[in-house]
Length: 359
Image 1 (cartoon, rainbow, N blue to C red):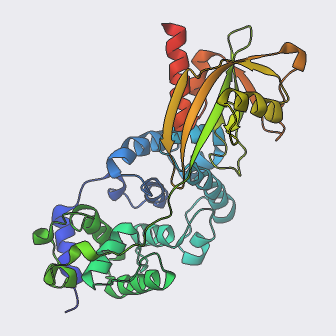
Image 2 (cartoon, rainbow, N blue to C red):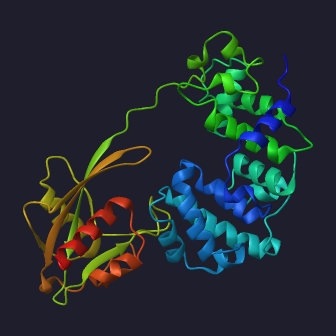
Image 3 (tube, rainbow, N blue to C red):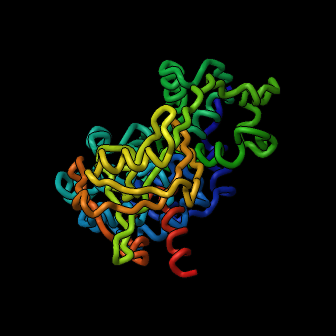
């Protein structure tokens, strides 16, 4: 039995959560919400969305902004490449499309950081274009609905799910349909303990009828994430300012500021890691405390770290620090640290430093 889109749309109209990006057809704000909601829950994204749109109310305001300002507003959401791509794409929209998000699928796909899902979501919701948007929630719904048991990491399975979603798409109301399907996955067809009695497609769902929802979707186990120990030096000058360095745009966490340091080598004492890294990166000689004043554990998508922060003192005879990668350095006052965008783990260090200075 083919699921009826009308049942899904009726359920959506009666049950959908109210969100600010659902109250507008502005493609900029819809696009922003889709970018923020990648790997981020709605409750986490909402305050960032409000602050971001207040600071950058339209695509031209975002395009005109400095990247440092954009990253500062994004700080805490993680996946900073999304913010960098958003900024680049905003400039492309202004330069190529007169400040309007392009309604053409291929033109949207050509923007920095825009993939098939984002292009389909924005175009269907903002412009009523008939493109099916497939995210993780939709993948789960479709795999259960049709009992697709193969590994969803496979490209062939991903294509099958996209084809199924496209066949189901209500072409008269593609934006509402896509949002309804995503909402169904987020609130009813959840990864564990799905609320099947409340599902508008309960009778058409093969997984429900065969009491096998827990089998779908099947995803092969991810590789074990490696763990790294990172040691950084918090260097203070005679005026009480701290030395921070900017990460290259093309690097992970690009454009953010950090305390200089790096990855521990095999059997290397962590204090020696700081001395070696600061000499290699900045050309300076430092003395380092034997024990860190802060130890922070943090997880990224593909690896985890333990960040060890050491107080370090620069030997003035080694000369002024200069980044070997050509990126800028700053000596900043403690109360200026909040003006710079830092990765989450480094922000923990800045918070500790501020406490030290005010206690």
